[in-house]
Length: 308
Image (tube, rainbow, N blue to C red):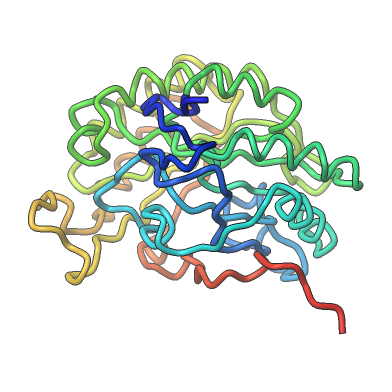
């Protein structure tokens, strides 16, 4: 079967050793599976209880090629180890046993078929906590529809207001159309629901990572989405952009992205969000623009635990 799980429709024969544009074969490659404390508070809690958190599984590979990617060790496919579907199901159950509020699947698009199978197995084994589909937003709407009954929460990026930026920074010229279509399906599949502790059980969170000098574009994104969905979803307006270190800069790296987002432009964006009526929003302070929230991709939790 030729691969068609993302909008690139690259046609790789992954079942017979082919490698997709994303860098993935038919084998699941995972770099970390552990409690994570730095997602939005309704996903990972407020961080005060380190015995709880979001049970986060970081997959290797990605169907985008963002020049500023902060998870480059895994998005480029270098970090990680191969596991099978049964092991992925076991990981989900182990994270639940560790106190996870949910199973948070990061960059899952290219493994969506295997993920559905793993969820079936883990639910037969007693998995009860919500599944978070944590995506770049570059998704085929048909694939989102196939997650009905599997994904409870969609934590999705909405990166760009125009395809010129999408092509320049992420290598795709049709991002906006697919992000719009996918988000529409997500909102329909996952109405807002929280438990008594304020932890999301169902719903959509749209993340926008503000880029330096892109205030107008960021405003356009918020207006576009709020006009369609209002406060029936949550917004995560992020200022944590960090330029790559000099050792990771490619010769053609866009010079406009060589700085952090200024406090002034981020403040203007937050003021705009308030002015148009956004109330369900998470915002960040200046401390967020660092690499402190990026976990080590050290294979923690990937392999079966040894019982001594």
